[in-house]
Figure (spheres, rainbow, N blue to C red):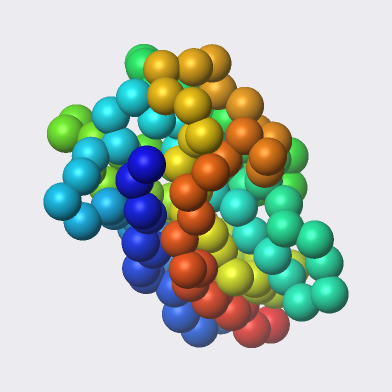
Length: 126
């Protein structure tokens, strides 16, 4: 299993943009479905965006559709989450995760992800 490491969080104002990165030092994400999740204070962790291992089909939560974009580089070394038009309600710790099973259909269920990063804080002020 790969061990994701996130970077790129920070404090921004509403309407700003931010890009998060996720890498696994010394490894690639080849074969893994990758997902971004977030957890706001007092709330459960929720799915934000995902990308399948094959053709790179993308999936989004309704709350971020049209504002966030998940992508990966061609070498499958880094996965990105581009966040635009940020809102205060996007404030959360963002986690990158790799699927439990390789070469499998993508699933946005938290239980189907086995390797999690330590998280990166995103704070959006109004």
